[in-house]
Image 1 (cartoon, rainbow, N blue to C red):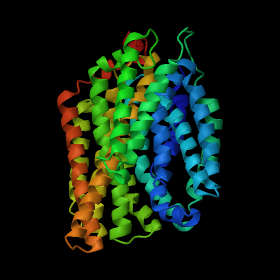
Image 2: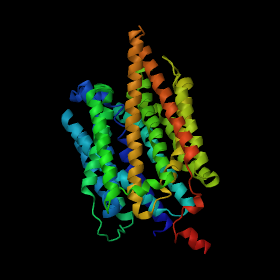
Image 3: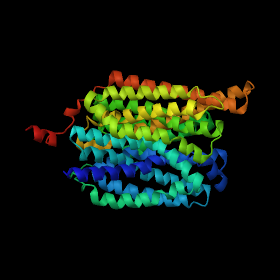
Image 4: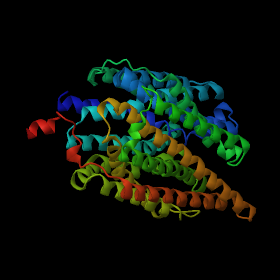
Amino acid sequence: MPDIKSRWLALYVLCLGDLMIVLDSSIVNVALPSIQTDLAFSQAALAWVVNGYLLTFGGFLLLSGRFGDLLGNKRVFLGGVVSFTIASIGCGLAPSAELLVIGRAIQGLGGAAVSAVALALIMGLFTEPGERAKAMGVFGFVMSGGGALGVLLGGVLTGLFSWHWIFLVNIPIGVAVWIAARRVLPADDVVPSEARVDVVGAVLVTASLMLSVYAIVGGNDAGWTSARTLLMLGGGLALMIAFIAREARITNPLVPLRLFAHRNVSVSQIVGVLWAAAMFAWFFLAAIYLQKVLHYDALDVGLAFVPMSVVMAYCSLRVSDKLVMRFGIRPPLVAGLLMAAASLALFSRAPVGGSFVVDVLPSMILLGFGAGIAFNPVLLAAMGDVEPHEAGLASGVVNTSFMMGGALGLAVLVSVSSARTESLLADGAAQVEALNGGLQLAFAAGAVAALLAAIVGGVFLRPKPMSDMAPEGSEVEVAAA
């Protein structure tokens, strides 16, 4: 086991690598108008700058997590960083719309590899409960605050320079992470095994996830009740059923179904889906409100997210771990999710011509507190019951639930917003009033999702006490002996 200084240095490197990945799920939102103008995207094709990334990222998380368990988490992490960095160069220099979308898809592949194993590496580095809670607070900020930082960074880079830099900024970060990770991450300790990767299972689950994500992100354009959307969702569900049936009967499954026999693992996935649905949609819809309703430019939108980012960082890094160690996992999780629900409900009343100080800032501050407090307990609850040799897989499952929840939530709430806007326009409302009415309804729906996450977590989670989470032979048990 590395000494404490080495462990924390490794944590910072892992978090920087994962932050680079998380940023790219939201950093392009503010830059989309500039990208559309420069590369002559059609309005329908523009969505694929976001969707191309989500599609491959969500589809390959489980497979990447399993590769981490079998081949070594460090090896998979380094490979993911290299792939993501090279793809970022391609995106930043892309001369056409088609090449940008291809680059974004490759970014998703690299991002899946990094995200799927980063959490597993952190859980292996920190076994003492107090240290683990602090480490997860740092990682929780990266995961939850990355969306806000992405909007901030996207606005600043686009406003001061050009959209190309939202991708090119990844190059020095990726190189630095790769060099540092080679030096500070512990060597892979993969137990020799005759187990092979379940190739058929990998194809089934990856195809199922990609088909489902494709149907979700295209649901607004094609229509949620259209034959295309229903056939894709049905196909994704059929492939998932075939995958589950296969995993139940083979000797070396890609995803051992016993993983979901752990109550906290299963419940955490539900909480994660609902929580990510609210959060992903909030970042996207809040940026639209600031740009299209309050008429902020890209730089102003980025700067508007600064207060929330500061509050979220403080709560994640200085408050969340203390609450977890004092009250356990469940109380701060529920309190944070309730604050997030209140934030979304508050934003649902933001008017046309609203004031930033009165109508935007209070909601952002409240969400900063809620997200900063809640994310750490969600991750701890999901990973606390898992055996070390399956940490990579569990990490992939956790990230998959968040990614699928985010993609589903964003697509559904944007669809709700669009339907409400069209209805108000048909009734004779002005364009900006109709748009704002749609956003208000979507924020209210997001508040319901966050509230349901709080209820599910509060009622059904049965997390272990933090003192019970140290594995056998850990520093805590050695000290006790």
